[in-house]
Structures are given as C-alpha cells and as structure tokens.
Image (tube, rainbow, N blue to C red; front, side):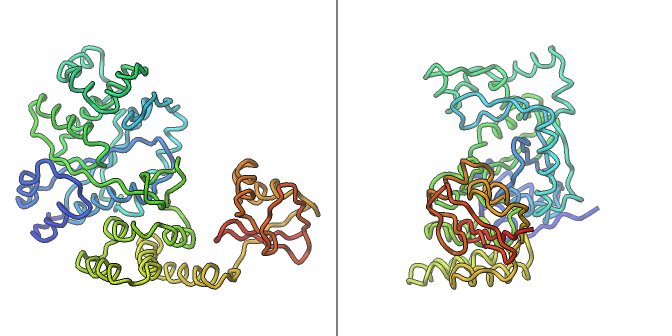
Length: 402
C-alpha cells in the first residue's frame, strides 16, 4: 500500500495553483497534513466523446492528489447522463440513450488515462446505487433538500422567472450528484467553478446522512482559443487531448496573446517562478509568438512526448512560418478523373459534410495546387502525379488518380 506523501510545499501548490476556491481550505490542509489517505471524488457524465484541455485542468488537479498518494475515484455518471447536467442551460437537455452512454463511456477512461494513472484509480458508476433506489428511499432523499435551495440555483431561477419548462428530473440532478458523495463517503470533491452548486449539495447531503462533510476544490474554466467563451466542442474553440501532435501544436499557436499566461498556468507543469519570468518577458515586449511556441512545445510534450513535440514544432516552422508543404502527405487514391471540390472535401475527410465544405470554401480556407478555391462548383481533375488539396494551414491531402 502506497504511503501518503506529506510535503508542505506541494500541498500548498495543490491548494493554490489552478484553483479558484477551496471549501474549506484549513480543513482540507489539515487533512492533507494528517497522513490519512483521502478519497478524492471526480464525477463526469459521458455526454460527449471528446476530452479537451479544459477538462484537463481538473484532471491535472486529480493527478496532483494521486501523486501525493491519495485515492482518486473516477465516478462515471452513467445514470445521471440519462438526464444530463442542466448547469448553465436555458432549456432541457435531451436525454442520452443507453447506446450513446456506453459509446461515450469507452472513450472517457481511455482519454483520462493520458493524464491519470488509471491502474491506481477506482472507477465507479452511479447507476450501481441510483438505479436501485426504491420510491421510499427517493422520498427520504428528497426530504433532506428543500425546494428553495434548489430553486435558488441561478440557471433554475432564470428558467422559472422566464416561464421555461424545468422538469422534475432536472431538479433532481444536483440531488443525485450530491447523493453520489454519500455513497462514496468522499473526503474531497473536485470540479469546475460551474459545478459549485452540485458540489455543495454533496456536503449538505453527507451532513444530513451523518457523515463528515467533503471539502471542495473548484478549478477555473479554461477559455477556448479565441479567449472569450469557455473551451467547448460545440463552440469549435477546443483543443482535444486526442489531437495529433501537429494539430495540437498548431491550435495552441492560434490562441489569442492574452491567453498565453493562463494556458501556461493551467495547461503545463512549468514551475510558477518560470511562469513569472515569462510574464515579465511578455511585459518587456518579447515576441508573443516565441512564447506561444514554448507553450505549444510544453503542452504537446505532455500528451505526445518530447520527440513528437520537437517534430510538431519543426513541421509548424516549415508549413506555417516558411509556408512550405510538409515532407509527408497522406495520399488518397481517386477512381474518377473529375470530381466537384465540395464532394471531394467530404470524400477525403477534410470536411465532415457538404455544408461545412461550402463554408470552408466561402471563407477562403481551401487550396487546390496552392491556389485558393473561390468557386464551390470547381471540378478538380485527378492525375497520376497527384494534386495537393489543402484545408486551412495544416490539412494536406494528395489526391492521386488510381
């Protein structure tokens, strides 16, 4: 059994770096200095199939606890996913099917394993207890929470005020998430700032069930590459953990300059004194592009290793800075001589749909043979030598006549 590490400096960093709020700080610090192995709960509903750098902010905090020898519990909300977290939503979320949940669940643990040591993590599914509650037990559970407490939640208040439907099952969501903490007897729960209400519900229900109350750490919400909205797949401003090293590097280089320090703090393992030095360099007028290259190298190294990070940087220099075509391009064999550019982009998977292909062309994001395409009706001619189709700055496919 691994011994818990008591290191005051590391504990202080756990409680400060990449942290928005700790409830209750002195209580948690005392627990961490006690040498007791703590149960650290992190819940995630498998409502999507992609984890990105925004999700990684919380996962990295879990890793810090794991590295100190504490027990991380990765709670998969396969039951609550049937309702969907209503946090921040102005309308009811469409429930997921069992098939969708199972498909998403497979990818979650695999992607989380890019940061956490999954062999040392306990993976739990809340359907194990929530699906077994009988009506009497549900009534008992609801008796421990008042209507006023749940209705006071900001997004619920807005919907009630604007006479927008709020289903009872959505109302129950934070109660069920709180009950997960009772079942797990968690000592600490970690989540984003948008989850604070749900995390506090865990403390309340543990108290009502005569258990010690869990302490809470909320982590900041990472903004997407444009620096405004939170990182989100639906807003197409995300950097997935599963991106290729070249795409990850390129996307990091596209973030707005104002986000450089925030990404260093939340997405890298660089020491804080080194980040302070980078802040100083930025204020003194150092070219932000050079700092972003250092940032991209650090982040890609975490998910792909140092060798891939160096290769990605070299590829970026060649294809973006020097505007060269990369040495290695995927060939796609076409069995017809002529094809419409919109159909071709979908065929070679540079666009997921014809509407996306048209949008890319209209925005000047497609080149054929190095020339920007302006006509969605363009017929592309395939040859034995091949013609290079380019999407954006990093997508290259050579179309060859089969």
